[in-house]
Length: 121
Image 1 (cartoon, rainbow, N blue to C red):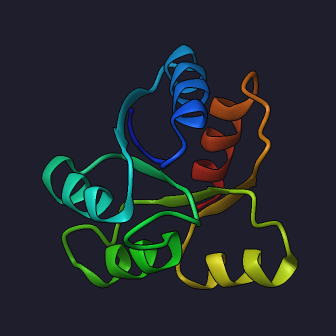
Image 2: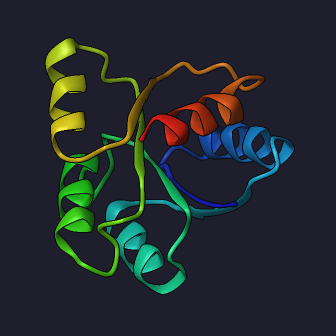
């Protein structure tokens, strides 16, 4: 299963990428929202793990654009973010996200959490 990790923090990229690879995902990384849209359209990953706060374009806008584009609208999006208020979670899910994981995440269970959310989507 291919996963596009969209994260601007290099340290979080490294930890999440290793955890997801260990869980059996093939992981591509984008460092901002613009890169994420380009990669999603070019590679059509099976799932996108999306940060909320990024330079150039934030996660909610990336999610909105992904869901508005017929070429990417079917790709499940899961937010991976420090934004943990109920209103933010509700907003992310209302944009069409399949799930929401709050940072800090458990690297040992990250892959399982992603799979569980995909099963519920």
